[in-house]
Length: 258
Image 1 (cartoon, rainbow, N blue to C red):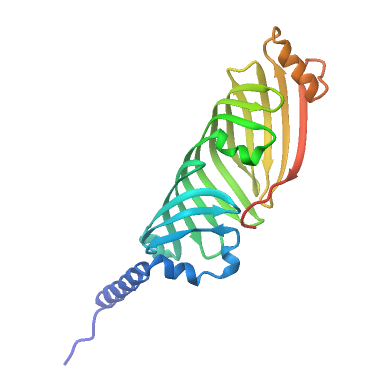
Image 2: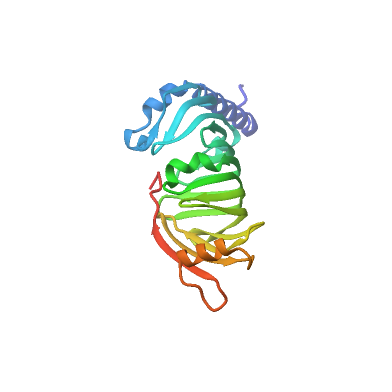
């Protein structure tokens, strides 16, 4: 009499078949997968070439809403697939500098990035900040970023802008600008301050998931001998009794994937 297979044997067999199927899926050429992506999900994305597989591949000349990011390399992590989640280690190198992170995409449309780090030459952002031009280097260390279209845009981490400068009618050196980023409800708040500059900056920027932002900054002259800073502050707004200028702005960012 043939003995029926044990539960352990059935489980191991099922696990083996599932692993094999996932391996086959991950081995599909990336070019084939890209063709299966619905056109509406490709909105705002531009690439010149894609190679490799779902498991490991590379995209050349990646642009998001015409923002050139350059070359993107990815590696798929296997274990999260068993939990119904796509989990990738990504590296980007291009005109805006270098970026690397671990990115998870869930079935409910959430995107989560962890251990995101980047170094960006500030001048590479100038095409998007004109008529103002920027100088210095921007480094990001974001421990966690969670994005869900129009519902969540939460970040935790730090942004450091070293040797910061802004030039319009004249160049203004801002020293080292630090931004501490914290989740705030469904959005995020950036707390700003700077060091090593006669022009002092303190304040917050609040950013919501739908792209709405509000800025509240206080500008001050830290060096009473700097008449140029005093004149600049007079151009920017009316000073209070302590000589500080308060600036408030609101607006709408065009986020790429809403």
